[in-house]
Length: 241
Ligand code: 6PG
Image (cartoon, rainbow, N blue to C red; front, side, top):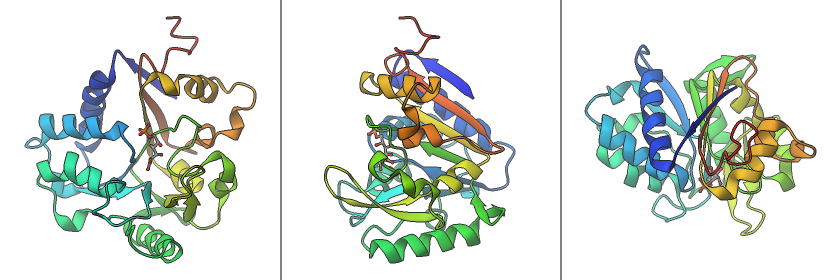
């Protein structure tokens, strides 16, 4: 596991953008699963601002690790957020954007998306393998849309599952733990003081941390890297501040 701690969100976004572009450089095609929520917004803005014209985006295929079951025009949509902060600023072919169809029936869409991944990606022991999975982590230790109250979804047979947000009841489509842990590279993007307690629990594997889905991220052969700001890392041993 590789821990990268930077002073603030802006620096995390800058460093992650360089890392992301580095990951692409020798690849003919690159399949990446994006995370949603608010953290990626600044990362996508910085990626677009600094690298829009410096990357051959036609070799990048964009997927999502999870999506809210809402129309693509809904402010809750991870796809909509990504269009606003990234796709509207880079020259990426429409055909390279493989959104989860949030407007569809969740169960059918989870099956369709799992099928799409199985067709588009290489497979390792029948599990679709991303070149990179980008993950966020909720204050409750969820990741993608696998929440603590339904942590059993992590080990679901289906590569995409239908999850339910514990507070809002909102339905989500999410990739499962097998897909995440089969990735060649997994990068957590976690910032802010509200994440510090769970970051410490998950990284230092403290008592009870196995209740948090984020603690189950452990790529079988791939690399795991954490991009943290000092606030999110403030309770780690390595970071006495
Ligand atoms: C989502 C995300 C989710 C997110 C965490 C952290 O659809 O909401 O995929 O897993 O990464 O909830 O969200 P923030 O970055 O907004 O704190």
